[in-house]
Image 1 (spheres, rainbow, N blue to C red):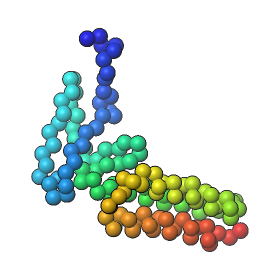
Image 2 (cartoon, one colour):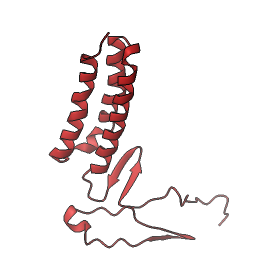
Image 3 (cartoon, rainbow, N blue to C red):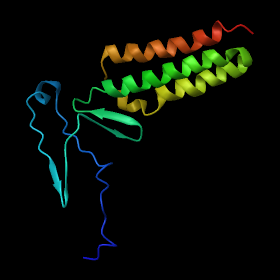
Image 4 (cartoon, helix red, strand yellow):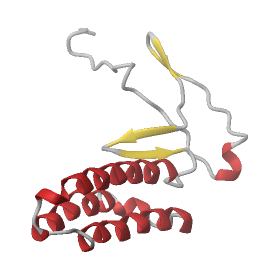
Amino acid sequence: MDDSKSSKLNDNKTNIIYLASLHCVKSLRTPALQMSAFSIISNGSVKNLEVIFDQCINMYEHVTSVCRAAYKHLKNIHCLKAFLTQEALVIVVHVFITSRIDYCNSLLYDISDYNINRLQRIQNNGPRRVKYSKI
């Protein structure tokens, strides 16, 4: 086979994950996948299109990532609110916070109440930043 036409994997970007229930993941043996010259070791989580999937599919790591990014943006918005009108502040909060929470939200179907509450706190915190803005 001509090497120039064969597809090649980038071993730095290639990940595999074995999915199992929370009960079974503890006893799950995860062998490495042999691909020609290199071996791919299973990860506890993988990222695809900015969504983090974990072995138990409980979306805990993804929600953590969303919360971290949203709180970072809220902190930055707080620093900028003296320079923004009320209308602009509403738009900024919506763009940076709501869009983060809504991105791929269908994957969050049936997640735990704990994770829903974490996302709800961010959603509630955004309008508070707008409401208490001194303009």
